[in-house]
Length: 209
Image 1 (cartoon, rainbow, N blue to C red):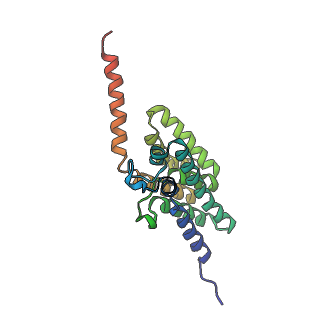
Image 2 (cartoon, helix red, strand yellow):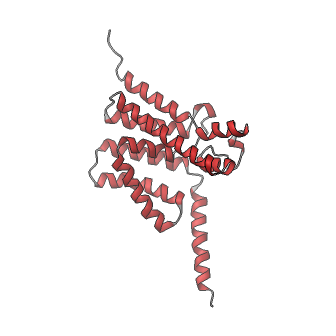
Image 3 (cartoon, rainbow, N blue to C red):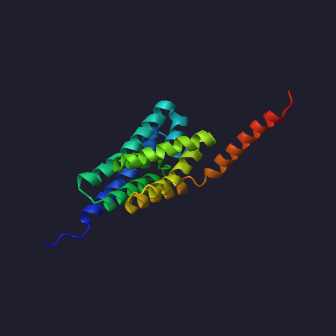
């Protein structure tokens, strides 16, 4: 009896997607308040909106759960000895599950914490590259959301320049694209806040003392 080609890889990817679908913020708010977080605050099931509803403990617990499910998904890929391509596809699958969970009608979070957990398990040096870029960009922009998006967009370029494998570059590029898509509605507001803040600072400097 012949084995089905790529059956193990497909199974692990499906498990990765299922792990991603466990949107901890949604279930935490449902457990603590009995309400659907999609109808509260910004309507997002992510950690930031959970923090608005449940405070800092809810925020940090959601971040940790999202981070570790990404990490665990890629750990499973290693446990079942998937090749780097299989690990990358599992990493992408868990992010897709978080952003578009089937049981919530494909209305999930933004995928940042989950992607970082997956990256850390896949190759910690890539996670550190992202962190370094994030700190530099954040110092320049002073905006966490935009800094994270720019850092994710720049990380594949940095990996390519550093001669990482094309598999790694592809995986991080896919994650960056998913995260940018998930944030597409937030970007104009964040840019507006950034420009407004700089204009206010400029106006204050222009006022004669």
